[in-house]
Image (cartoon, rainbow, N blue to C red; front, side):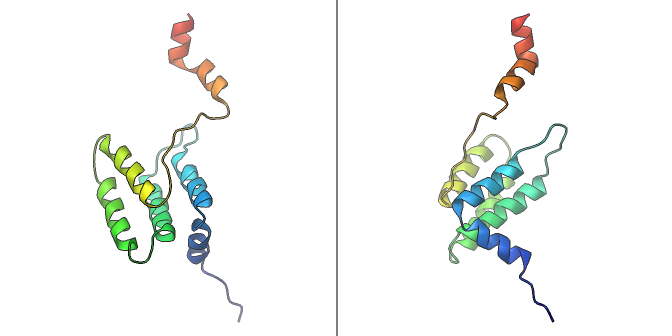
Length: 115
């Protein structure tokens, strides 16, 4: 009988690399045009990263902190998420997309300024 590895085990093993974990989260934060946010998928992705980057002793604590911060309202969530990610060795950042010029030129705010 052939055996196979669990996808979950494979994913957690890959996410132990902080660079891969950061890219994994980045793909969950980005939305394509017209795409709706999927909070449960983001929660799952953050949970996977916590599982991969937490020590066994800290995993439950980090999962509980994640649940607590994702239940919060308002802008504090962003700051608390940044702090939580730092505990895992990651950093929350904002980047300029590769197609920034096109976005700026097509922005309604820019069109109003240029008119």
